[in-house]
Length: 123
Length: 150
Image (tube, rainbow over all chains, first blue to last red; front, side, top):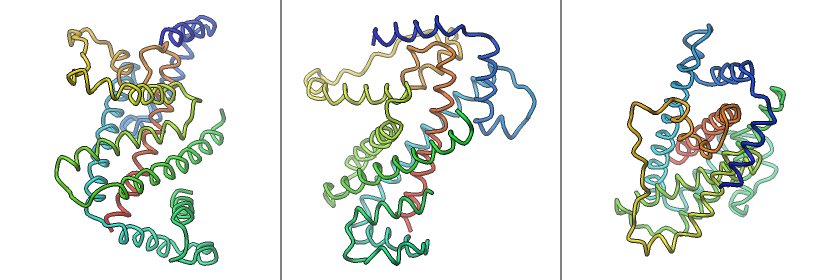
C-alpha cells in the first residue's frame, strides 16, 4: 500500500496538476452522469458534479446488489435443463444466421453456446 | 484516448465480463444444492456480487488503478479467509469521522476502489472509467437476469 501511495505522490508531482485539467476532468464526468446530462447543458458547479457522482455510484452499487439478489433467487428456482434451454431459446429468438450453421443444439458443448450467445447479445 | 478507442474498449470489456460472469454463474449453479433456504440464497447473492466485481476487474485487467485495487483486495481476502474465521468475526472498524467534516472528494474516494491513495486528477479519471464500467456491468447483469427469468 505504501509503495502505491508513494508512486502516486511521485506521479502527482511530475504531472503539474493545473486547474484547467481538473475542470476538464470534471466536465468529462459531468457528461457521464445521466441526471446532469439530461437536466442542463450549462456549466454545473464542480461540487454539484462531485455530489451527483457520489449519488450515481451509490445507486449503481445498489443496483448491483439488487441484481445479484435477483440472480441468486433465479438460480435457486431454475434447474439446469431449463437454464440451458433458456440460453438456447434466446439464441433462436435472436435468429442470428451464424447459429444455424455453427450449432447442433443438443450436442454442442456449453462453452460454444455461451460464447456465441455472449457475442450475439452484447456486440 | 480517442472516443472510438474508448467505445471499443468498453465493448471488449463488456464481452470479457459477460463471459467470465456467466461462467461463474453456471459453475455456481452446478455446485449448488437444490435446497433454497433463505440464508443460502443470501450467501449466494453475496458470492454473486463478489463474482460480478471480480469479473469486471479481471476484464479491465491491471490497466486501471481501481481494477488493481479490487484484485488486490480480493487476493488479500482469499489469503486471510482462514484467519478471519479464527479472529472472532470482528467487523472492520469504520473511522468515526464527524459527519460534517467530510468533503465531497473524500466521499468519492471512499466509493471508488483504491481512491484513498490517489491525487485529485487521477481520482477524477478513475471515477470516469469506473462509472462507465459499472454501468456496463449493470446492463449485462440486467440482460442475464431478464434471460433467466423468461
